[in-house]
Length: 198
Image 1 (cartoon, rainbow, N blue to C red):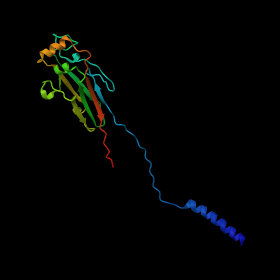
Image 2 (cartoon, rainbow, N blue to C red):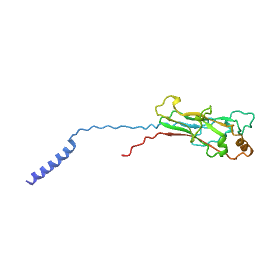
Image 3 (cartoon, one colour):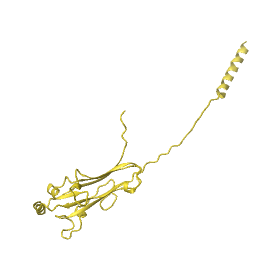
Image 4 (cartoon, rainbow, N blue to C red):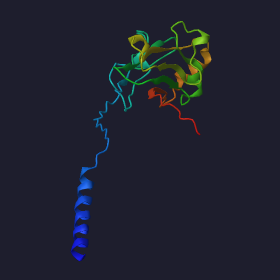
């Protein structure tokens, strides 16, 4: 009886181990390899001479943008002078949507200078094209824009010394204010979708 019980136990252990390795099941598997392609950002502001200036500052003078006037020295401006400040935000194949804008801040200029030197977005110097609230130009560019004219931003700011304020002009010429500065800002920013708050 004892031998028979030991034999039954041994047989149970052997068949149990065999069942664990012989039972089958359905299995489906797949393994994939993912890749990452980073979208290109190729928007580059340029200074008035056409040099890439992304991430940096640049300096220029208003006199350096004026139309030639043999009656006024080259490094200064005077009543009657006019000029053109060119700006470029170049797109070199950017693969995302973005906004770009040009701003001109003249609030640092002496109020007397601000009263006689005016800035415009058109060379006809019309009242409708005068630069207001620092806004010169802005544009939204879609990621799927293919036409070069639809990408980036290029144009000019026109300026002139108005000539209908002789007294103010003469006063400025007698004691020219020093260290007069204004700011031209070129910027581009990727459009980031806003995720709604649940």
